[in-house]
Length: 576
Ligand code: C2E
Ligand code: MG
Ligand code: MG
Image 1 (spheres, rainbow, N blue to C red):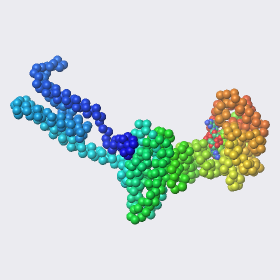
Image 2: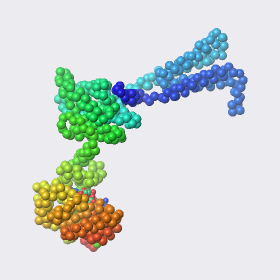
Image 3: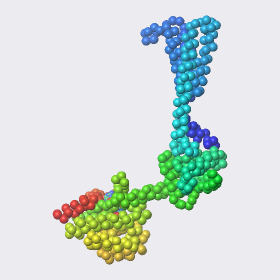
Image 4: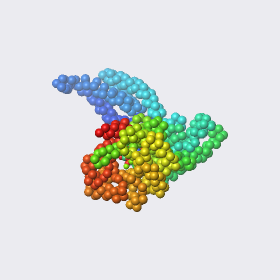
């Protein structure tokens, strides 16, 4: 760490290992006070007469003790605050008055100086005791501080040191890269050769990387730390371009890949590296760690042995996706996937049915939005289980409440195209409908417009089979997917669901209102019913009535309800 901008890094490390130093100005101030009080001590001891302070007459000589006490205090403060330097300075200051006092007492036989002489001796004893006691405490504090920022196994700085250094670099506006390195298959060395050998390998790697960082071989400035187990971090600064950062990482990578021999056995190590740049990627300390870790995990996921990857926001998404995926799997096994039913009404505010909406509870009971977990479930194939669970429960609800009520309420269920295309889809649906004795005519399958367009060809046949069974089809989030009229004409749907984003803008501009009116009229021309989603205010209801919309679903008339609440709503309608 003694290269080009080594001074900055070294200073930070010094600060890490040692307590913050008292400013030099305090040293100068103490010297000045000492010198002044020493002069005043001498003067006051020689001047005869009185001084009046606060109406009280004082002999000048009686102030001698006060000034002498002040100079003693300065000497003690010097030792306390500046340790060795302070002690030597205080000793020089105190001892410098001894020759004069010696001459006065023993040659000029001026015995008035004897108390000053003994005072000086006592100060020397006092500051020596303080210095020796203080040194023990300082040494102990330094060793504690050193332990706190050092990794015991390798002697390298640890994560705390890393974050202190980065904090300092950020404050000084120095750009840097944080690199995280994870040794591949390290666990297998521990498992097959034992932990002692594993430790020796880690020490060998640490030694190599430390020597490399201390040399001038890379052209950049590096700081190496061990974080945990087989994970190391580098802070690289003093670079002009990102290519230089990558070059440095590759030099570290090849240094690692050289043979390591322990107890006559050769080991060939590789590692994955992830990095992020400050301030280009972020200048928030915690985010730098998160981004770098995310890049490292992505690099590890690639499975190509050793890999160097820079952070991109996509990487973070996939990290979050992984977390959500884990949560979905857990929720599926713990029975934390459930459903709500949002009522749908005609324009006279009469209930016509419900939309079943999936809900997911995290392990701590908090809800995770479907807008977050459904896209991940779609990517990972878990959506089939969610769809099927919601479908079965919603059909069960129909069997329990709706068919018994004699009303022809419709149950709309969201189905992802991925699920729709599964061979077992139709059989599963038939089985569930039979199980609860619910006629297919009461079920409406919602398929999102944008997804539908991408997979139209393949899905069309499946949808026609659903239609043949008697089910209804709704195109969800209509207006967001740029579907063409010819596509709509050929598509065997029964309902258009106007997306909330259009309803939101309706009371803001005439153009948006016209747009909604146009969708309604296209729907009617094609013989489809039209429902507006996300209707929140009575004004919007009025506009929708005026443009001839058929149905409404939104907070204005009903939020998503628990099955129990929805059952009560059905019962209340039946008893009207
Ligand atoms: P969606 O199918 O378009 O469902 C309508 C969404 O709009 C629901 O959000 C509903 O709670 C919300 N909403 C309805 N009225 C209002 C309103 O007046 N104001 C506001 N602010 N929001 C309103 P939710 O439940 O968060 O679901 C989001 C999306 O997740 C759904 O959009 C659907 O695409 C998907 N989803 C939900 N459940 C399932 C499921 O079981 N399977 C599949 N594949 N997707 C589902
Ligand atoms: Mg829907
Ligand atoms: Mg929708």
